[in-house]
Length: 168
Image 1 (cartoon, rainbow, N blue to C red):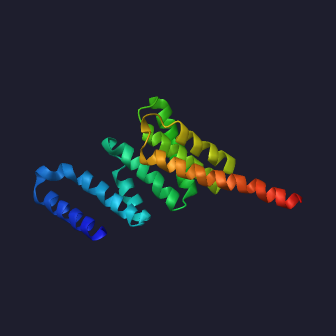
Image 2 (cartoon, one colour):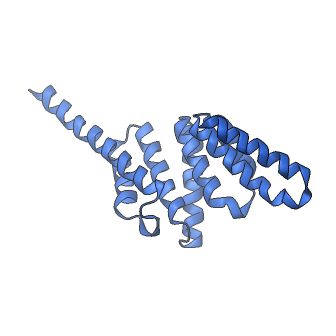
Image 3 (spheres, rainbow, N blue to C red):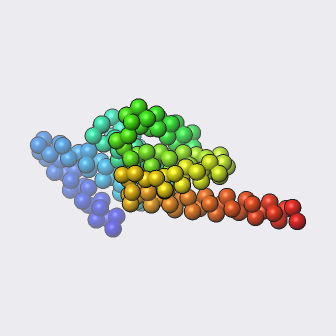
C-alpha cells in the first residue's frame, strides 16, 4: 500500500533529521523513496532520486539498475543508450563482479534496439540475458529478460507472418 510506504518513509526521515547518529540511514531512505516512486509509476521522480544517489559507490548496483529501468520506462532512448554503453564499458574494465547490472545493461540495450526497430538484435540481447544469467539467476533482471525475450520473439515472428501475407 503506497500510503503505508509513504508514512514509513516520512517516519524514517523524521528520525534521521532528529539525531545525527542516524544520518547513515539517509541513503536507505532515499532508495526506498525511489522504489516507491517506481512502483507508483512516477518514473521521473525515481530517476531524479537515483541520479542524486549516483555518486555513492556503495549504491552503484541498485542505482544503476534503477536508472536503466527509469530511462527505459520513460522512453528516453538516447539517455538509455548512453547509460548502457557506459555500464558495459565499466563492467568490461572491472571484469565482472556485477552480474545483475550486466543483465540490466543487456536488457537496456535490447530496449534501445527495440526502439530503433532492430527486433532481431533486441531478441539476441534479451535471450543472452535470459539464457546466461550467471550469478544473477532468478533475479528480477533475469525474469525481466525472459519476459522481454518472449515479447521480442513474438514481434520477430510476426514480421515473417506479415511478409508471407504480402507475398501471397
